Image (cartoon, rainbow, N blue to C red; front, side, top):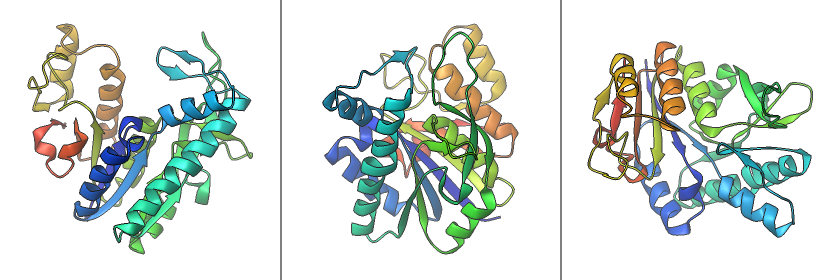
Length: 257
């Protein structure tokens, strides 16, 4: 099968002009079929402040009421997404900016209220992989904003890490899929204060051992749990590393079965 690389890049990169330009140059150079999934949380928070709309975060997760949903729809699906697309066109890459609502790409349901009501936050139910495959077969590179829909006209704010993993799983029957989570660290670290303490490779077994030893904890646990879930569902490799090493994923942490 043909290889595809799905890259998720965080808001810290897309919101800084110099960092974004350097990343997009690396992204253009990346060989083969590819998809970019982006965040933009800081831009959404800044826009909300300009419009005097309060931002509420619980355990690092955004509460999305109706006002905030309008903000993230404008910022993620519009400002951030189209800025990336325009810059990629300037670098001669044929790019298409889309959300989960376009072409019925990603259907989700509103997260049920348990201890916390996160508002209009979506958990993914289905990926329309065949529609995505049609775009890719035309030589077009999808740039995916972290928004989904529920099939009944409701837009939902959805975690970009989750969207990237869901797209990877959806495309696994058609491609050899590599998933790359790019962020500001060099990979999964044994010591968060030491950027050189990268764990070069990890299986699910060693992941659980690292948790037991409390080497891995906090927010890295759900990211890695989702990653190994994607591997179990057919994704070939997951890499976690510094965004500047996009074309050298071996410098980060490789997750495999």
